[in-house]
Image 1: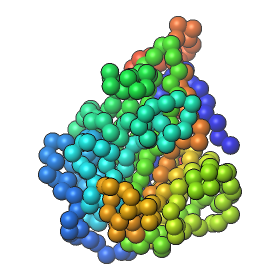
Image 2 (image 1 turned 30 degrees about the horizontal axis):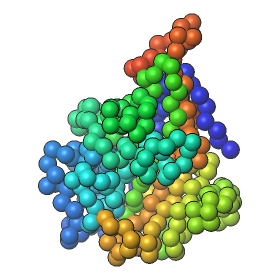
Image 3 (image 1 turned 60 degrees about the vertical axis):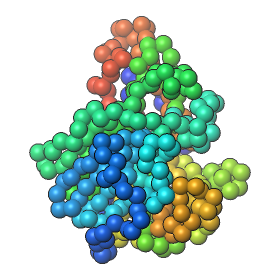
Image 4 (image 1 turned 90 degrees about the horizontal axis):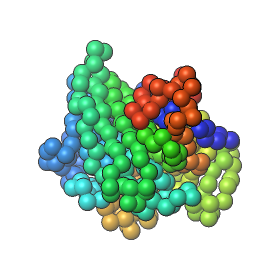
Length: 333
């Protein structure tokens, strides 16, 4: 079982890549009638355009990716009832869960799933075309008086999003600026995948993994199925999972989710409980599936660079440490 490793250089780099490799489904050239009007939000969103009707839209509230289209086909679910004015977390897309998953951990943050998804982020670097044609943008979130009131820690998150021809790369760096105190946290990318029919959606890569089932009061069980299909309310945290999952029967046929430094995979679906979710329509649940990548079963701990590290060859790591990206080993997939 994976356990968190402390590092003097307080940086965590995370990569999640979504790769569509079967575009056999029909394009949905028009947005669903009654869907949230993302464009009307104006400066509160950042639009990334790669060409060939491939785009990505990030709402600065939570730095939430609210749309990802490949050949004009939407890949992410966004509820028609989602609140996009910054008053609550966005129901859909890719919310960022930090610094706490659920109410887990020995620390108390306050809001469920932390506060990163419910705070306005800063555009650190606006969309820029790369030499290979991909488009890149960077966002950041640092501690402030409000965050320290509910979680008394210094931190900086840097979120780099790269839109390629058929893939969306989401890279998160977590920095501990403190020279005295460790930073312990959970982090998760809460991916809402758009599907034609959730009963036909299949997720692989979980066979043999232990999982915590919220429906069974957190009882730890072992997955015996090679292919997972959801047919009722589901809230499971799979531990030490494969670095990639194939998600079949999504809008483009299949999606490959690859992850680095994210040990856990969460499957969540509200099913009939969607009627109790105020920012989601009850009839929407067949069109979504959450396959989430995170570090939630065990918290990550980043050890600060204090005076005792002065003789270390890595002494360059400090409040603005960016040189040591591989705090946890990134294995090429």
